[in-house]
Image (cartoon, rainbow, N blue to C red; front, side, top):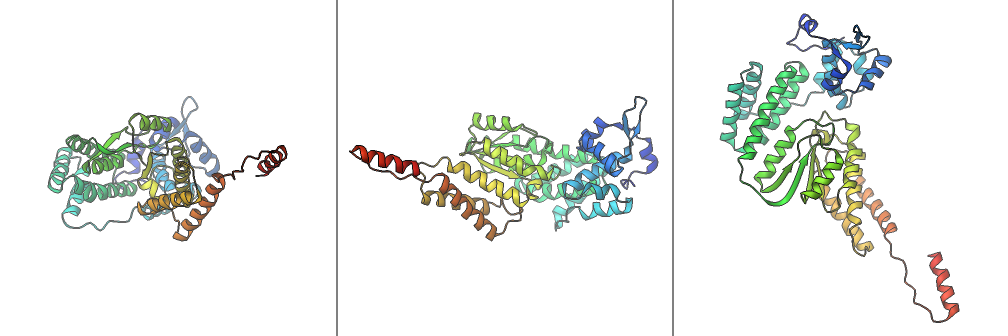
Length: 382
């Protein structure tokens, strides 16, 4: 029932030590409660018990759980994955792998050589290959043409069982080291905009963040990186402390898709309206229509609170301007909203905001007592 990597035999798996539930949680990203529920509901995983009566998970089951986590993050249901045979599970893994990029020539050669050197555990040659590629192409083209497709290729290799976990970590560490060194060698920027970069809690992947930082720094932006897994309240405090113009968060494919909308909404409400919120990464591209609506509505609502003497014309202009910005910036490309949907959302937002911020009628102050009573009654009805 388990899906074993092509490079690992059942005999090898049997030699690996069992893991307790805490270790499985850290290794796979699946919570303890989730593991217990699946065990009761689906009959998988099937841990043994150690001498203390605690759950002990065999290595082959942990391996399957790692892959399941990625497949679930891409939309597959746990019940289907738990019940799948080894052959069915392997087919599902292949079907969910990222589509191959049409890389050709020199870039494809670098990608192929990188995969081969990681498999050969030749760290020195791997570092030299990547350094030479960056020196030859320049940092911008290296990030876009080499690192981006390499990340996809390594992810596919892991999913198919061609790469072990330690090999994926080896690749990631070399790229992280190289990008940090390249960013550190760039001239100090100090210009606008000031961009705060981080990932939300439970998002451990830093490569996307470093890639964005490298590209932004090349354009002269001032980048303040907090690394990964920053609590939302600390993101807000850091944005204020560093006078950030933009907060940019990276969300990978491993991040639970169902949490994206709520997270984006909460962070948008916490940040001052003057600070833009950018959300990027493969996880953000898997956003649902609800995520797109939340991102759009929260941004417009926050901006509306800053209007001085809001009028219907100002509100309409604001809604159309921010909607157009989100659309042209590509922030709504992957959330499944059509142009007709966006038009309906804009119209609804305009009506709602005009209802909230409508101006009350001003009545002239009457001189007589009867007149004052009449105006008071009219104001109560208004």
